[in-house]
Length: 116
Image (cartoon, rainbow, N blue to C red; front, top):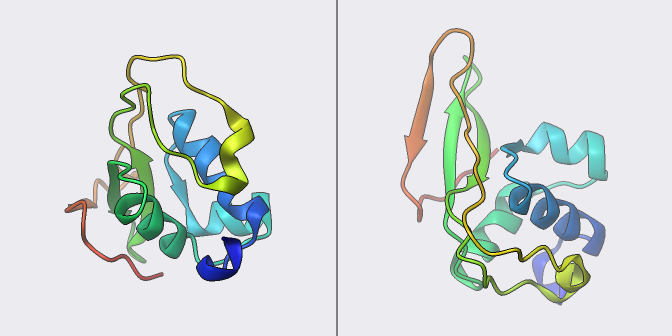
């Protein structure tokens, strides 16, 4: 499955784990923490193939995209590379992708393609 995504299994697993934990993640986070590229492609597949409700917020003067899981209904379909995470405790994941210091954050719609 990972070959179809053009992302490594470890990058996909990292993105799923961080989103399920309620964290807002960005492409620079993925590079630094998972050594992966193309976070926007992973988010796109999670949204459209697996039905995850992920919000994109762009921050700062460079408009870096930050992604967070809006709600976690307790039963999300995980991609095969992240299946062992098993982080389903029910309820909602509380997450917030707050504005940057300059207050310039913009929200994009769920289906909006985000390109780094």
